[in-house]
Image (cartoon, rainbow, N blue to C red; front, top):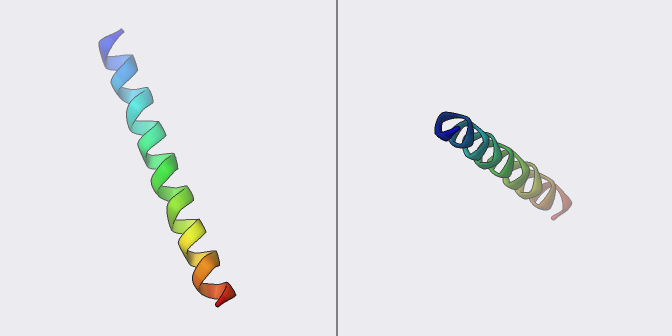
Length: 31
């Protein structure tokens, strides 16, 4: 269970980073 939880947390972090990168790219493009 511990390993599975760590994998889920890692996936959430990766998704958050991708969302932030996309948000920053669209924000810079809009300006």
